[in-house]
Length: 509
Image (cartoon, rainbow, N blue to C red; front, side, top):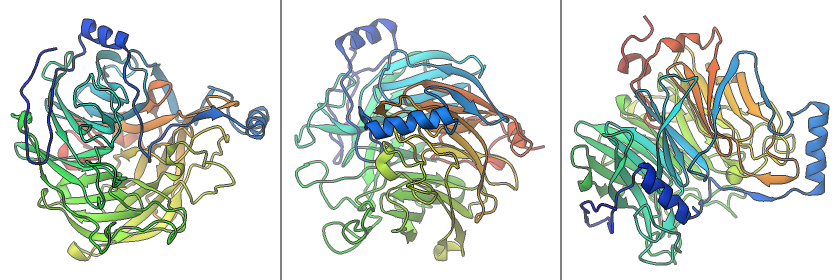
């Protein structure tokens, strides 16, 4: 492997940086050696095991009665078509997030990432597969740079690393950066270690630089690089032309307070069934509005990012009745609403059933009221898919994006084995589903994690990264969503929300 320059910063330990490449010979040789198994952290976990006889019987009965589709059977509403599925190839791990730029889709996987040419959405072509294990490999793209999150303790920051206990000081977790000037041959150019790793990340473009907000959590006193209190986020500054100089520039405290855990939600026993806040899971920014929303385990926050190195919290909320784990956030186009998701069960639980009900493992819709520093998040309603799933199916609210239609608040969203849902929250108090796509359970006898991790709308199509089944392309045809087909985006990182009607040419004329 060719050595590249390394960078040392006061807050980042960089070591042994090599080149990750999709060149066939190197990729095959690395895979022959066996990719290291990635260990997921809480919040996006995997489940394996044999279903109880009662669970198996209930699943078979539901299939026989027609309540749910059969194993691997595809069902969908009349206004959605399933165009194509691209199964996993060289990367066998868990499929994760998606990002887009031009005619390319970038698909994260716990073993690395894959790049698809989607110039013909009905026939995507693989142009590169990069082996670089490290859950969960949350992915973003900006210009010639791809950003990849590593949130499992590794032996070093190279793409040949192996799992290593977080109790070891030499272990590494954080951000990796690749150069895609040659889209067929990505090159690993920089890495920055961050406290408690990088579960997810969010890009905040600013002139010639890109700021990266790194979300991570779950500190423990025995983890030398993940010490409590961990009540903020890491902010990395990346010079576009010199990414090897990337470095942490701040660790803003978002939850100030007394005691070892800061001022976030204390969790149990004070709030039974609710996650203690020890960091953020995911952040979505609206750069055009200098606004961000954070889903932070036991808390939801709204904050100002006019100075991206020093974000300032405007409002902080909790839902200690129905929310277990604040997972992600989505603004509407007018920036007067936020949809927060609750990942009850950590992504491996069967929560889309009658026993759990409609308000848990759901979306919470909040209006933003007031102005400036006096803005507040006000709860309006919950939304959950109306279709029950088997108790062998992991199902809960997960990653989604807006469908840009003026005057409407429409969203497509992944629900793991609950499939892909399109829903309308124009009336904050009365959200409703308008389209869906799903597969039947992976099994009626085994409990295994699968389904859509991310489902996003990009240039007229819905793209879904299915944990087990691969990359899906869907076509939505509906008078309520058809105006969005006139929006042609240059790129989309969903956690960096654009102003669809100002940022892109040829919009809704």
